[in-house]
Amino acid sequence: MTRLGVVGARRMSDNRSVTVVRASLDDVDDLRGFLRDVDLTLAGLGEPTVQLWIERDTDGEIVGSTGFELSEDRRHALIRSVAVAPRHRTAGTGSRLARNAMDHARAAGATRAWLFSRRSGPFWQKLGFTSADRNELAAALPDAHQVRLFVETGQLEREVAWSQRLGDAGR
Image (cartoon, rainbow, N blue to C red; front, side, top):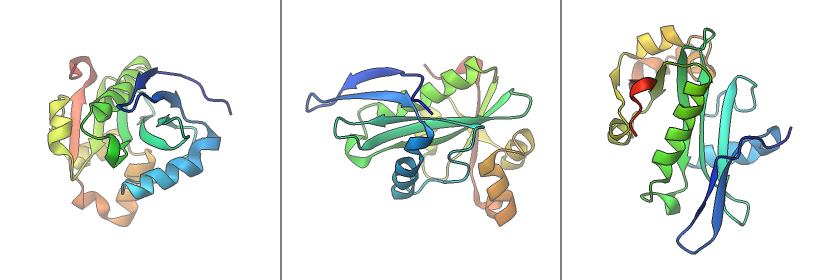
């Protein structure tokens, strides 16, 4: 699988360039390690229904990721795997990556974005997300890998859900 969907390049503070690209199957092992290090869900990585993008620095290390999974009717998107390496936080990278996932989900036909986040509510609120009912999220996206995992393990009851109409995306 080739890397598709180059989003854009930016310069880091030490003048190195990084680019957001569509993740390929060749990237999944590196992405799995990155997401494990930042304590995010690994369910469904590498599955064709999960759309993922990564940002690597010039040394080839993943420094950011983002993605989404669509509902069967394509109206709902589960935003997932939005993460930034600790040394790259507070520079707007997370917001840019989150908007990338929302823009691609909107382009794919989604009209509502959903996500789970127990730790980053204020970040998501700055992007226009509001608190949502986790069971409503699960009903809208029952086949999403993360939803299935959370339902099967009983973790859904401990999760915090957020939602936003994509027409109102925080820009």
